[in-house]
Length: 366
Image (cartoon, rainbow, N blue to C red; front, side):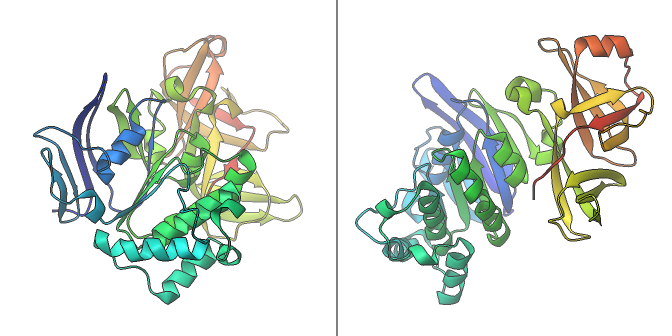
């Protein structure tokens, strides 16, 4: 049996049915997203065993362990080698931060997990910057601090699978931006798969390696993040948040103009700032609404990024907007551009045409 997470579930709750068949990677951050009520949390709770799925064909397995077969739990919820971080941190209020961590570490052996040793534990505490919080009680912490403690508690228990159920949804924007870098670091140090439920595309674009999209209890699409974001249903789901995620390398730092150039398979993308070291791999995000297209090479402009590309696909109009899928030269990576239906007609665009994509803004991700 492979090391992937295999989830085949048909589970009915009232008028809602979750019906999914997934074979998910054994590592990296797997984002599970979709509209409200699409079954994101129900899927996570079924994997954890908190929802008892009924049906002869149901199966949940990880590596060489069968967690659920039919309607029978082969491995009980409390014995599954996983940790679950909820929207609210669920820390025990009568214990200090250190005592909360100790309590979770002791209980982890029931889940067939061996808690981290002193050195690894100290590394996690340092990584999540909670050393100064150890003697405090949960009520003394901010929302962001509580979630960092919850993450530390989960990691120190040393699970094989980490489940995160919208861990930032209860935080304001400032606290959310504060904790996102810590989640990035967790993704780097955790060797197993992280299933991350969220409806926030900014979080998903920054953190995820793999994407699962649910709609009405079914899998609408799934696959590697960048390629899954390219598919036609995105404008219906995301509206103004249609985006492309590209992988490149830091090629140049222009200190005179405070700019960094990221090369994506030979195409240069300029960004403000000098934070990144040369030759490092870098993920960038481009919003579809930030791209305009021209049928001839534009003249001098204040827009720094102008990329030659081929018009691969024109998606049907939605409320007067048209989505274009653009292929970068000598690359398998794509850009999505949003233009008006009127512009499409005026420019007489056809698939296969060479275009110049003018990009107003490019954002660094990870």
